[in-house]
Length: 358
Ligand code: DAH
Image 1: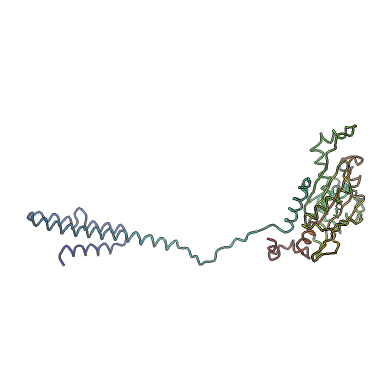
Image 2: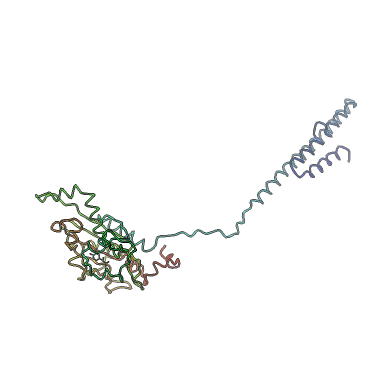
């Protein structure tokens, strides 16, 4: 091996030894730098003849190019090494199971409430919301519920440790019916001009503004078994106008039930009953023509023609305003729709049950 070949070998070995780009640049200086080996060899040619210079110069050049090529290779290799080191440091273990995000969904009772709102909205009903901590007057007195009525007893109604203006404790509303009176008051305030115009009219041509609303929400009673929960849901309905009759109640409620259950063959029965705030009053029962519940009468709502005393407590003239109200149980509607037989399942928060409705 001649000295140039061994110089190339030495350079290769030095480059290979360099473990970092900085070390490599130092090694490069030894061979290709201003006072490096190649420069020295070039200088050493000064004494040679022109012929010798030619062949010696060419040979040195070949060696120089070989060293440069080795340098380039080593630079590339160091860069590659660094990249793969970095990649290894940032490696993802794709075999690790990920953290799964369970997707939620609407509670079956919420689905029912949305359905109820949708159906009644399509029939022109407003949807109203009201307080769950209610005054004695709104929950009972305004609804023609006499002071000795059993619904007022501690056995049925939750009371809170706070008295209202009348000195009587507030209650956790045992039904959504107080919303009838609350909504009427709000409505009269909002449409004061229209109500005043209708009241002042003697010609009988100015129509009094109608009240048409549903009020779904949570209600509370001291009660707990497979079909009763201390917290449950109700949806109140109210339609008052100058000529709203029991016939309208039948049409509206029949339409609602058939749409809700998607069953045109559903039959309704209005069974005489008693509520202090309606006269006459009726329980509404439904019957499916087919399916597991076929032939059974199932109670879904209380209803009736709004009692004149209640109309008066709303601030309206019972000689002018007449209409109906109803109070139904969305929990029960949900049980019937999905075939659930224990109401408490809705409020246990057990995902094995709830996820079946997604
Ligand atoms: N509030 C009654 C209850 O909780 C249900 C009810 C019956 C509501 C008749 C009404 C009605 O609006 O007219 O049992």
